[in-house]
Image (cartoon, rainbow, N blue to C red; front, side, top):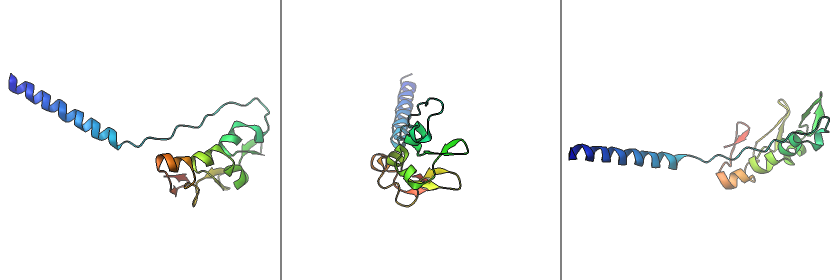
Length: 119
């Protein structure tokens, strides 16, 4: 009976060790951006999507980014490096050195622009 208790104890220590190792490998991810709702008919340049994502111009009834300045003035640029307009998809993306000055680079080591985001 004593031998079986020792094997259970060894198994428990092994599982605890694996759990500790696995949790040490996890990369903490940045928190999501806040998304408050705006009142109806709010001009794009005054909306949350402008402030957070850079979608500050009305295009076909929707708020979208239309310049790099829209992207660079956004929280997404400051925090996540999404500072360059990608006109084909009307989104702000990370390109070139956009990530190096972002909070996510400093805090989470996401400093290289790849596939439109900081990695």
